[in-house]
Length: 269
Image 1 (cartoon, rainbow, N blue to C red):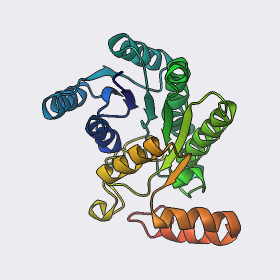
Image 2: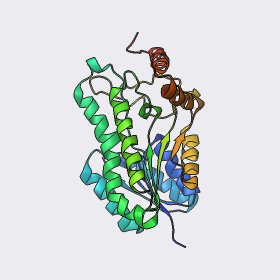
Image 3: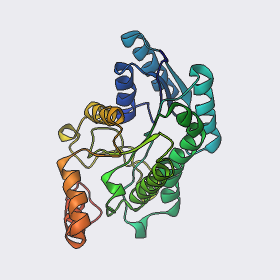
């Protein structure tokens, strides 16, 4: 029986780390990507010791095409094939567009959108061979443009458009393409989110303890992979946001603005 292999980006913390551990619980060998070498090494060692399942990594900046290509090639060299690619690497931002330097938006597009495109491009021939899965970890921000998150929403809209087109192109090839949209999740993404100058904001505007756990997100995503679902919207708040935006877009604008304006240190206060 062929061993299944999952490639996961942004795997050094948060959702990506939980996805890696969940993959091992599902019996997958994993090949992980992130920029933090020490964190990746620790995660692979923990997976190997806890589950007796091989986990390897490539230090990777997904904003660089050559590094994404190397990530895929090194993983295939070690494991022979790819059954699942999860494009999870991402970064957020918070800042009013009028005050935000353009390089901030470019940085988000390079990581959130192009990183997924690069990895998918080089993994696709192997996914076609295995009739496997390609997953993009998106956001409700990919359905609804969020104020003070222009770059983040733009990158997630682009990611979802790319994946929907890819799915449509491959309706008859047997591969599975899924867009996963967690709600607010307990992670480092808000602490590392960029401000209008491109610096990490360092503090989260939300009460992280009340948010969905990264472990729960990972379980939902892996269940979606097993069921070969097209979309996962994980929270009631997210489902309501998508529904209201589809049928009552003006109301959705007002509600979204009100939610964002109540965040700690909101730029709208």
